[in-house]
Length: 411
Image (cartoon, rainbow, N blue to C red; front, side, top):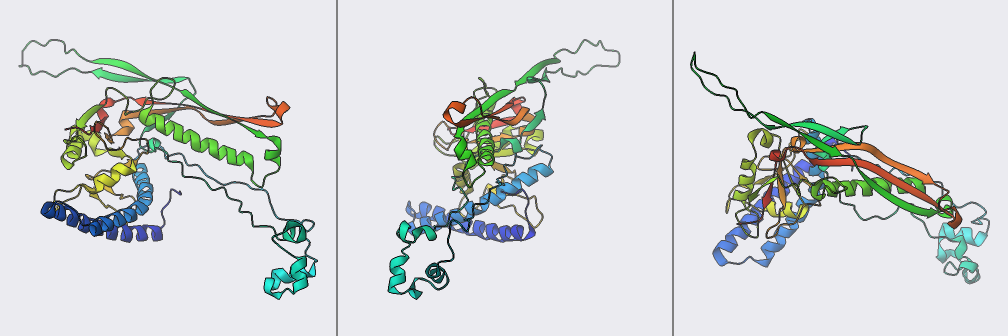
């Protein structure tokens, strides 16, 4: 997905999401009213709500793009690494030797269709049989690989990122401070104690992948397999590091902010669901300076549940469609931007589906070695294969726990 937004795309999104969200609020208010009056929801209302939610989901990818631009404009640090899929494919056209275009019957078939052939020509040219004509009418081969979407938690887009040429980075941190005291003009002054410092060390851990491909598979396919493999390495490494930035154990891998024991929590106020009061409490529990630059983090399923939270029939929603004709005004939750992280937990009893805070100050990522790919034609030479070894060294951990807070689904 490109990181730029054209005026036409913006205009379409502004109109589309604005209309969809207004319709969503109307239908959701109707659902709430039916629950309060009858204790159940009309299936038609439920169907309408699901349809509108799907429309909002369509625009969510655009919103995430706008959110990224918004965060970059606020200097939240480096952009989320882009994985470009510009594959240099060799020409796979059929040569004149492979397809004999001098055969009159075949030319007739191509130009005028099967209906133009007489009975004898049909017997001679049968596309369904290779030897009697099928070889001369090969199927179209689409030079594009169908791939499932690889979901990646975009923590790089909100965290602090630093490059290093060493095995780790040490960052001094203030662990305690003194208090100022009042005194009279000639009063006795004693030493102010309590100012202490510590050291945070972020190690660069190693990611790797090893893939063997036959020499013929590298030589013969219509795809440039080396380029294809490079894209796969980049995508899978981004997925792995995104997962670790959220849930990493800190043992041979980065520490996830959801795992750090010093990151505090706020209860949702309900044993099985998120609530408006719970989200407000989460937002309010973070110090003002952190909240001012705060970002909500959650997965798409959780976002769908937050969209429905309001103060009652006809009341206010915590989710707001924030697009305007000025690029850089994304959708918000309680007035703050949010990012979708697929590795965040779903809503459920005892789960932590939402985090909020100033991740630029609270979480640091250290890049030691960018993606490096080694082509080894020797190790597997006896099997006719080429070995590709990819590696990357990256670290990450919470450096200021009070800047981040998580929501627990609990009463």
